Length: 270
Image 1 (cartoon, rainbow, N blue to C red):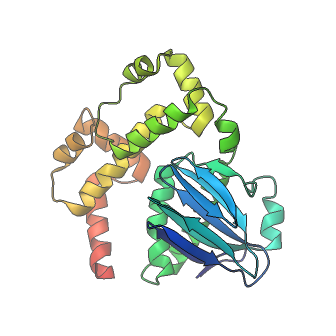
Image 2 (cartoon, helix red, strand yellow):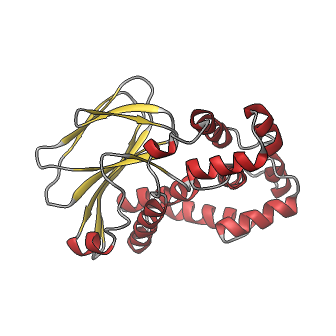
Image 3 (tube, helix red, strand yellow):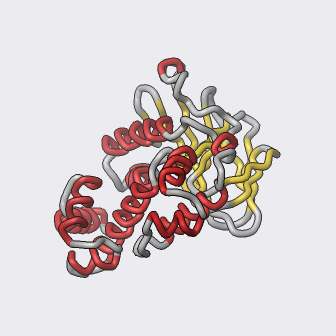
């Protein structure tokens, strides 16, 4: 459990298999947050939700419990959160509307924060860092909640755009040329930028860079490949551009990141 003066993270985890999970609240102001990284259908408390890639829903919990049922291939993460009245009052105009599926504008940032929250919950990470990560997570979540999927789905070519976004994060090293994408969709570049931003709250170029940074971090964590090789494998045009973008998004150079990650892994016994 991660607790601050305003918010408490009671539980978090992920489910990759079909089945049913039940979540129960012990106190008031508890919510279940469900996030999906792929297109899937979940039944929450008897209500069916259609999730596109990088979407989430916030659901109020009750003492008798709320069930999440999934069939077939699924992949979702969950968080059980408790908010104080003071916190809810302070962010009342920002809290995502319950019972509606919302889009995540910054999946890369959410992914990185998730890596901090899990060890913190398992008491293998630093509790103070866990508290800061939780607050940052909620800030990003609220920042992403300027439109629901219901409204975003009204954007022209929405299904094609979500499929494209999923492909980008699944295959970051591919050559994602905007003009080629526009030709494939049969639309102009200005129009493509407009509808992509309207659908996801970020640009396609930013998503491409974010997906490549995420992939580069995995390579730095799991291989001894040279920085130049990592850059090339991730689809960056030059090493200089890769290192500049990496430092801008991560806050340190690729070499420093690999060193810090491995030092922390040794301390954690991984």
